[in-house]
Structures are given as C-alpha cells and as structure tokens.
Amino acid sequence: MSESSNHGFQAGSTGSDEGKPHPDVTGRYYIPGFPIGEGKTDYEKYLRTVELLSLQKSAAESVSPEELLFQVTHQASELWMKLMLRELNEAIAFMAADNLWMALRSLRLVHDCQRVLVMQVDLIGSHISIVEYGKIRTALGQGSGMESPGFNWLLEMAPKLGEALDQLLIRRQITIREIYTQYQQHMELHTLCEALMDYDDLFHKWRAHHMALVARTIGTDSNSLKGLATQVLQKGVKIRFFPELLEIRSILTNESGVAYGGQPLGSEGTP
Image (tube, rainbow, N blue to C red; front, side, top):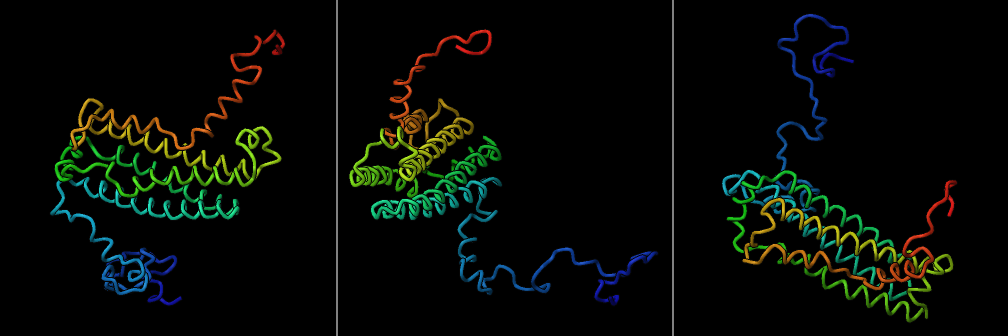
C-alpha cells in the first residue's frame, strides 16, 4: 500500500507525525465539501429533507434549548400515528374480507408504533426540566395534546375496530366466550382478539405514561393551557376500547373453582 493511500502513515513507522495528514475516520460517502443538506441527492428529494428539517424552530426562535426535543418528539408522534391509522384501516378491511392473518400483520406493526409513542413520552419526561418546560408552555398558546389530529383520529378508530370484530363474529357464528374457552379450535380468531387487546393495552399504557408526564412536568394540582384541571386526563386513562374482551376474563375467572382463593396448601405444597 502506498503512503498516499494510507493517509501518510506506514505500519511500524516511528518518530513525529507532524505535517502528516490526519486519517479520515468519518467513513463519509462523499468527498469533503459536498453540499450536505441542500436537497441535491435523490434521498433528500424523496424524503423532502430540506422541508422536513425546516419545520422546527431555529435556535434563535426557540424560547428554550429544550424546545427542539419537544417539537421533534411531537412531530414524529404525528407521523407514527399517521402510519398507525393507515394500518388500522387496512386491518379493518382485512377483517371484513376474512383475511385475518393479514389483519394481524397490520396490527403487529401498529403495536410496534405504539411502543415507540410510549418511549417518546418517556423521553420528554426524562430530559425536559420543569423550568424549561414552563418556558416552552409560553410558546404553546392554548395548545394541548388533546388537540392532536392523530390522537383524535385514533380515538375514532376504536368503535370501527369493535364493529369490524362484531361483524366477523356474526359471519363466523361464534361468540367471544367460545373463542376463549375453545381457543385451540379457534386459534386464528383467538389470536386476533388478543391482538386487539394488545392494541387496547398499549393505548392505555400510552395514555397512562402521558398522565405521568403531565404530573412530572406541571403537577397534578394545576390547570392545562386551556384552563382544564389535569385530573380530566385521568378519565381518558380509564377508558378501554374493547370492554367485551376484558369482561370475558372476569367471567371465566369468577366461574373457576379458585375465583376467591383455593384451599390452603398442606405441608407438602398440595391442597
């Protein structure tokens, strides 16, 4: 290997490196001086990165150095919710067509998007101080997460998912009880019902994490920017999308022989 191709260094060389070029440790794909970020590559054109990266406030416009984190996480959340809405509509269409495995494929992606949303809520709580968040609130007007278009569209999706499940059970002439008590014979339907429960659980956790974020940033005895008490958010945390899928668990538990406690264990660990 020539000296020039080795950035001026030779194996086993000794002495001063003064005057020798520094090795390129960036792993860059373009030559130095390439106009990065000007929208000249196909990647940038396809993703519209110039426009995308201009949607956040500049440092001069920001009221807090932590405002960029606040904006990025919320803007990204709207994009994840856009994807979720598309996949939920796909799941409903697949359920209507009795293509349950494809419906499950869409729901699986939705679940992973939900986990990202939960992580983003926690990211804000972990890295934005209450003092800096107070500054950010001054730039929000009367803005509230309850105004999120993605969030509100997702709320409207819940009854549509429930109706799609109801119509599916009517066509299959089967009840939720039969699906759960005879799950081995109805594994496809059982898996779908549990996937809907996963969606419900993860949505519930997302709202609970958001409530925890509110408590951590502005407290539980304060009002939102709309003048609403933060306790209003707690009502949403209690709502579940598919009460029938929760109810079957209580029914089957109460019908079991150990619903209210079994017999005390003997000395050998047996009743």
